[in-house]
Image (cartoon, rainbow, N blue to C red):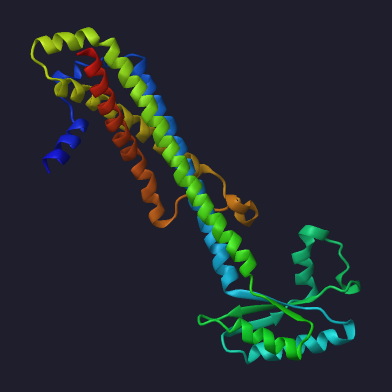
Length: 300
């Protein structure tokens, strides 16, 4: 408990110790700017990775509940095989609904690849049947065997080959997001370390005088740690606020936005940006503490 209180004390003011660290100079602006910029990037990294993850999860869930039955047959046999397939699906346990797509719906599906003038009525295009399963699901292997026996032109696609890449992409995007946050934390630590070492080196004479009058290294290091942690917290809070506002102001791209659809924070995801300033302060605390310890050892 005592250790926790000591760490929280870096956010409080100590007028005597604060005078040890110069209140102005390039180290102030470097610390503030670096933490604000890194927090802004962290917010966008979180928003993009969360949005991409939600989109991939939604696609995967939708594909997991549906399948497509493709029927390729001569024109004179097409209607009979479609009707036979629908009869089989209607009595198959685990199938909630099944319906054959009309030509207009199939034309809409093929339009992005072949354009709006595709003459489906004059082309040997397979007929598609949309299959939606219920909560328990159906026996895919058994259904395929029955369709093979009664509807030889039918091919059942349960979308598993589409689900696997989407799940892998979602995992990859989440890993990229966490990697980006780790890199942002590392850059922040490096910048704060440079600023702290510069401030300590610039005040070498002041540190020598403080040692002569009895100030301990822990007191001196605490003064620098307190100042730089508060600067990092303030800069990161400003960058986080700017990033959240920027994400909120981004226009909704709708379904046409692909992976850019729904960028933002939904539900409990709004808590993630709140952790960014705290993480920046923790990184600054550790970086400044280590930098102060090493510089003070060098000045001893």
